[in-house]
Length: 245
Image (cartoon, rainbow, N blue to C red):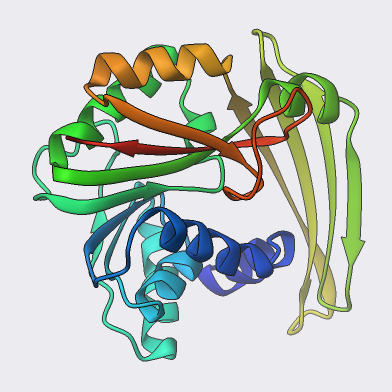
């Protein structure tokens, strides 16, 4: 899949309004003074650009060179300077320190197990400056166990159509998303098919809190709905604001 095609596909399945919601959540938890901010799993750079335009001094990090190429193109198009790092959030030892670290769009849920999640928390704690803040979100156990299994969604336009089906995973609180895309190749005037499978996993709220404590975070606030409401049994996404004393 070409960079241009992937950007088209990625943007097709993302709700653009969420980027402003994430920015609003960051500004709710951090007084915006142009702090240095590292966005983990920055992907194609849409949120990183939004955070930069919001006034933060943003650096994006992603494991995928292809994603970073798209993020660079997006930053250039937006006319913003956006340093981008190719790296794994399981090892942040050589990228300097930051006042704020973010990891949104349930990227933590792509970690294979709780040991990897704890490792990410520990790495983030080490690169946060004293008084810094780590903000992230994850799917709740309710979302993974009750909402996603059997979920089906499809959408289409003249250029792209996609089908999304979710199945319960093999381990507790996990899900598999099967995605099928049909993308128009204008030169051939034919639709090309692409298939992907995404594996996500979450944990009980108490387990996340325990891992954050082990990593060194002494103050953690958990909310739902981008920080707008308290957590309930049917909250679909949890938001964590973690502070390094």
